[in-house]
Image: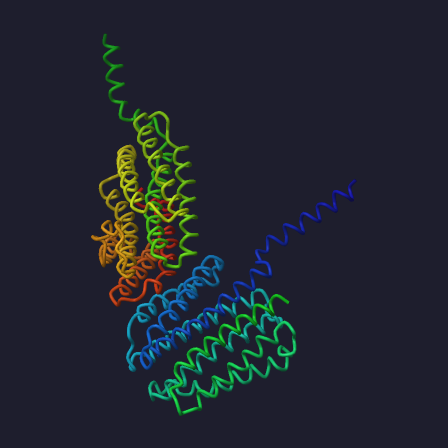
Length: 258
Length: 264
């Protein structure tokens, strides 16, 4: 009788012990992790869209895209405020909200060549702040397994494509010299990440091979457009970067479902 | 004789205390809070109706309308359950409000099912709001708020109502349709300064630090963003999600005001 009682006591203590640690379960951890990565990508997507407003002011193309990026940001920033209630993240989260609120005013401004660089650096600040929160989150829950690292790489890939798009335009129209180097740096990074995906046999995995093929095609087309001087590449680059973003997210979903 | 006189005098002196002692102050404050929430929800539902009727993110807006309507229904039931039964006038006022609110809910439900009767919704909203106004005044009298607190609470509510109306007017202006109910929003069209100014006045009252200050700052930033979007003629879709998030931020401010007993 005593043994049975002891067994139940141990069971109960184990149960309460686990729940008392306050660790979010794996799925939720992944969702929070992904929310931050999505916001990092969205911050550069907004910067890219604002650059297009200056040099390729096709509002029918840009406005829905900007609205989508704003939606991603608003949804995820609210989500982060709800789930990251721990005091360790509060300072960065509040700062992030302030930078975002400040940035929103400029989102509706038609920027000039001169003040675009400042807007870009606001996007970069958001990326950095999110990076700090992400690192703290990784450290706290020890998220350094392959699944998390791969997810981070996939979103870094999207981020780099948008940055290549920004770098291409700033070089072509010779503005914001500090951003010219973005083009080459990020082309290298994208190529490196693609090689990593190929090494990890994403292209041979029957679940991911379709998305990988699309990604490779899109990237080749994107790259071709950046070096073809015969026609205006802006619109194609815009659409291809978005397509890469879309297929990378699909690839991430498929990999996570495995 | 002397004893009788003293007794009568004592009763007369104690009378004001007696009146307030009939009520549980906490219960009345809670009732007041829920009543204000019902007014907020009425306005939120009206905006949802405008969004659905003008095909702004129709699937999401319909879902939101349904959720808000259920919340209103649930809140009105809870309000009725909390009305103190020892004040016949209060009971009468709440019953009148509830019966009008039920009619209103049925009409909004009808709109959700058939997409018609928007005009009726506006007519009934006026009736529901009139009942709300009288019961709110009665509650304020019982709670004995100071004029300053009443002004601040009225500002708190005004910010929300003006914001919702300005956004609806913006959606209607951009949609290009001219529905009959558009006249309800004529005075709110492009008037983002109204909620902004009221919020600035309220911000002065909350001090320079603390959670209330931070929350009012977040709302102010949202309002200026909406104002700018309309001034630059952006598509309402650009601010659709931030506008939905405004609700949560406002609800948080409302909750904080009652939690910190500010002006209550």
